[in-house]
Amino acid sequence: MSKRGIVFGAILSVTLVACTQQDTTQNTTRTQREKDSILAGSQIPGARAVKKTMTVADSAAARQARIDTSQQNP
Image 1 (cartoon, helix red, strand yellow):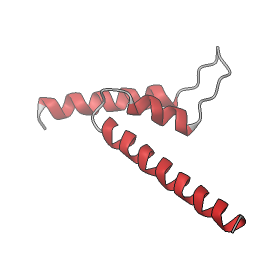
Image 2 (image 1 turned 90 degrees about the vertical axis):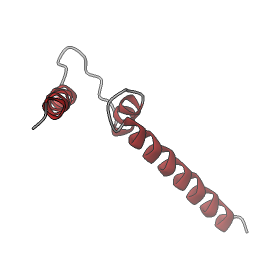
Image 3 (image 1 turned 180 degrees about the vertical axis):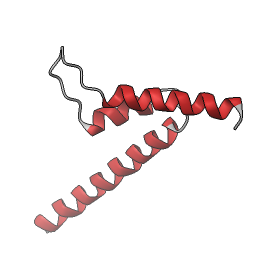
């Protein structure tokens, strides 16, 4: 395995551990959406894909809301 792969794996492991640990000093719980937004704004490899996925999901939800509204008010 190359040094780059080892470093990437180590960073990914540390990030995952840090994201899964609960902070006992604060009782704030982030939603999955908030966690994904933070990840999307980072420089971590794959963050652009997370941002793009969130954009596509928002577009689909908005489209479905327009369809639902138009069916309720013909």
